[in-house]
Length: 188
Ligand code: GAR
Image 1 (cartoon, protein in one colour):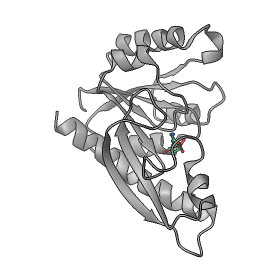
Image 2 (cartoon, protein in one colour):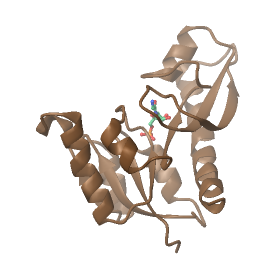
Image 3 (cartoon, helix red, strand yellow):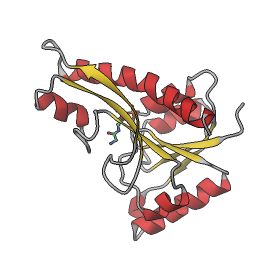
Image 4 (cartoon, protein in one colour):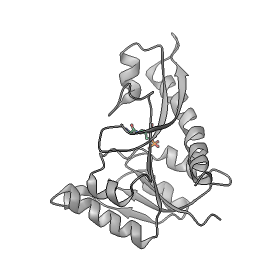
């Protein structure tokens, strides 16, 4: 097993987390799952892979800085060197960004800079776009901004519904994210 220790941050279902965990020859060990939602389904998935979880509810903290400081301490304790956001629906603040500069990667279901933020798939569908896609990028303090690492296009066809589009996008995500993670880690 790789000696690079990574954390996945997720807020929801965790299908990307699962895709990462199912990757053969992943170039890192997923040593921690950080989750901001105590009821998130991804926590169940982590249990099945024996990945330790750190549930940190921002509502318990007076500020984003305090919330992120607690997370950073837990990451350092677990000797985490990379962070992969997989449906983590929060904007990172300076505390997290400075502690892990250049080491935080996000996946987003659109061809950024198009359709940032929440419900990117619905946004593209409702806009009548002919194509959308998936972006993997380093994060900065913005909403789904920061240097792009990889993008893949998904065509929206006449017959597509929002549900079929979501399925197509997720299929691309589940293949693209682990591949980009491995490329990133192997080039370091
Ligand atoms: C994924 O489609 C991911 O790209 C998106 O949340 C979904 C999480 O699904 N992230 C964003 O929209 C970030 N702005 P999952 O919980 O099944 O992996």
